[in-house]
Amino acid sequence: MFGSAVIVFREVVEAALVVSIVMAAARAAPGRNGWVGIGIGVGLAGASLVAAFAASIAGFAAGIGQELLNAAILFLAVAMLACHNIWMARHGRELAARVNAVGHAVASGARPSTHSRSSSPRRCCAKDLRRCCASMASRLAEATASVH
Image (cartoon, rainbow, N blue to C red; front, side, top):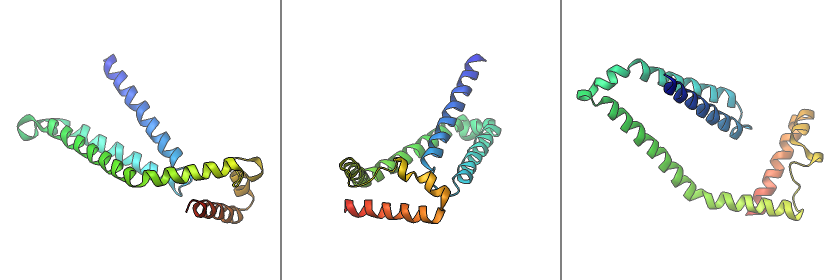
């Protein structure tokens, strides 16, 4: 019983960590709370379906249904990782070059740091959303133009 409780606790902590990472990564995305909430709901619904039909799944295909389900999930995970690796191989160098160029521009003083007190994005957005968005867009355009 204790072993099962430890496994459940570990899985809950892992899920909380993944959700926290997604929420932090999508901080600026519009409607992120709704999308992440939908993802959590779909995950819980899928887990509930598998749990509800666990006995049926295990008995499927002459008793090897659970193994087939495990294999299908593993193949899906491998496919997702392969897509990620292919995308990173195509775009990783470009992303790294952009980040390095912006870092050098900030270090040399050619571009202000976004974390300076005088140009705090949060303070700016709180005062005037339109002016802030225009300012952020122009900074992004300058950074992109300086890389190319």
